[in-house]
Length: 291
Image 1 (cartoon, rainbow, N blue to C red):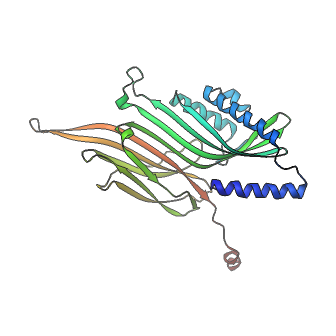
Image 2 (cartoon, rainbow, N blue to C red):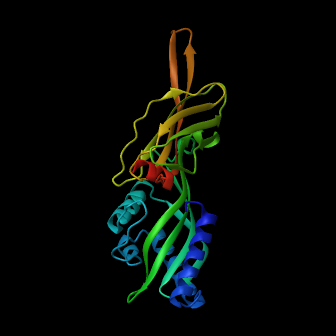
Image 3 (spheres, one colour):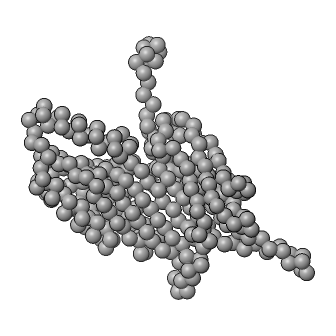
């Protein structure tokens, strides 16, 4: 259910079967045009950060697969704008399937923002760059007030925030696409950095919830081969998780005359990837044995 190709195929087959059984009309092209126009307008409102207007695109009972309500959603959008003033979103509609009063839309997003520690000076060497990508499915219902978003589910998501020299260093946080409840899984961070730069890094995981809970971090020096690994355990609450890597880059120089070492902070990086957590379904044999 978490893979984009499979979810499209499975849900389309499921909806087609229901349509035949209930004698429902097959895909409505006029509805697809309405939904496409609606979602494009939604993106424009997002760009303008008009939070009250954003709410009008959603059903009052909207809830995401992560359990976020409409109030949670608008609060998160507002805080993103406060922290990243020039954040821009680029949305792509990959596929729309509409059946009478219901619709399924597969979409992908890209976001980007620039952050300066000192807004007055705007030093590019210390500039932070936020980049994010996501793939997700949006479910809509045609109500007496028109098409409304009632639910959405994120399939894949990755976000990075890099400051200073981190923008010039290739880094890759490797995670599984999905895990089972309570299952152990491996996280690894790979990078290619100059030999004279020291990298201190931490890898952790946290459950996706609102308000978010800060992950516990233990920083370690990156090995000379440029790969740090950690074994973590998924939660058993059916909650999806974020794998998070935090990295600090420094250079140490030594003044022989004064016999002093100088530590220079060169940059920082934060990388976050979604790990989908699936319930572990017991087999019939295991269930019968327990009885």
